[in-house]
Amino acid sequence: MKHVPILVLDFGSQYTQLISKRLRNNGFYSEIVPYNESIEDIKARTPKGIVLSGGPASVYADDAYKVDKAVFDLGLPILGICYGMQTIAHYLGGSVIPADHHEYGKAELKVEQSSSPIFKDITDNEVVWMSHGDRVESLPTGFEVIATSSNSPYAAIANEDKNIYAFQYHPEVTHSVEGGQMLINFAKHICKCEKNWNMGNFAKEQIAKIRAQVGDKKVLCGVSGGVDSSVVATLLAEAIGDKLVPVFVDNGLLRGNEVQDVQNMFANRGIGLITVDASEQFLSKLAGVTDPETKRKIIGETFIEVFDQEAKKHDGISFLAQGTLYTDVIESVSVKGPSKTIKSHHNVGGLPDWMTFELIEPLREIFKDEVRVLGLELGLPAQMIGRHPFPGPGLAIRIMGDVNSPDLDILRKADTIMLDVLRSTGWYDKTWQAFTVLLNVKSVGVMGDNRTYDNTACIRIVNAIDGMTATFAHIPHDILEQMSRRIINEVDGINRVVYDISSKPPATIEWE
Image 1 (tube, rainbow, N blue to C red):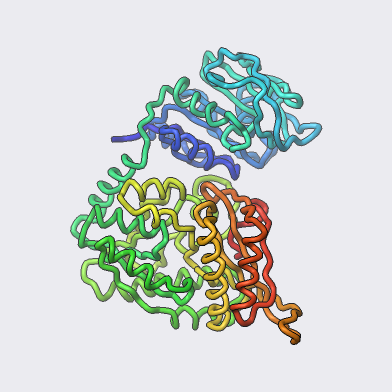
Image 2: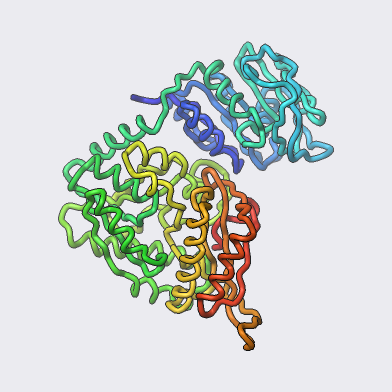
């Protein structure tokens, strides 16, 4: 089945992906394309509607991100959000000016046109989330106000004859209480889309696509035991059977008991796993390296080298499969629009010129929570699907500074204790991700009657939905105290434990 999308044109908002995700989670297929996508390519996708995202620029600036004006001549329903609203006003004859006061945070939405289909089943005076520095001063001909707030006389506008709607606020974020319903209304009642998007259909489509792409060749699949690579390996096994060559690389940067746990997990699935011990290869290349980005690049390049070495042992391998997610892509490089690069990911950006493999990345356009649903659809056990994310670079980005065997041993022990306590108290399944960081910051302590000068460990536990945003988990103090006491008592080399109470943004989830 070909899914007819709602196209989201990305003007650089960090929330853009949430628009598409909210639509897909409610059964409406959506794709994200750059704001400057050609009108021919837009037509070729046969969309049912278009969303213009938010963005950091000003529409009146010389270097403003400009959509092809022909978008407005397609006769398709359009929804503009924040910068998208200002784009609609600016292009169609209204005016946009700098606001006297920037507006960030919650606002109450006063619905002026309750009969508008965009506000079907919406409660009046509900909270929405504002985040803008410019405002619409005058409306284009044919538009009317359909909602206001105390600071925004044009909080929502529409030209319902042309099915063009625009919000000054962000309906896609969870702070906009009924924003999700507004997006559903746009898809269902204005674009007349069918709810035909789900992970069952996605799995069937990907299996068919993989079979067609691979043919009678073989696929080398890097697996780690994490959710993403486990789902990819299972999807490939369903699609191509024994043409799958699954390889688990022990890079020396894994958690305690990880190798045995991963081997047992795949054995129980009936998937023959090849384990390669490349720990010396990785650690020798990381010796003396302290820059986080350099660490990531070295690890990514070394993974490719190890996979290439293993591939040469098997005839007919033409493809390399990876568990790249959409969040990996958008945090690494703006492939969809002008969003800002946050950090590179070891499995994003293609293969080196000397490597002849083609990439297979079946999860590249979906989010972490969607991957979990897909895994359950494929029959993976809930215990596996519920595993916390673990980054490809592993413990290398959880040691501040040089990566070496003694520090890795210390970190493994501390991390194992933290996870033991988290599981035994029932908090593991209540949180998104939990890990320990070795800060390589030493401080004075007292053990017994002796002075110590040892390392500091930081515990990081967060709650999130898709990893794009996260808040620190409010773990009870007695549980944190238990973690701290055990780590200090049982791990030589640590005399102080701290808890990270930063959210994302402004911090990232990982420390490096």
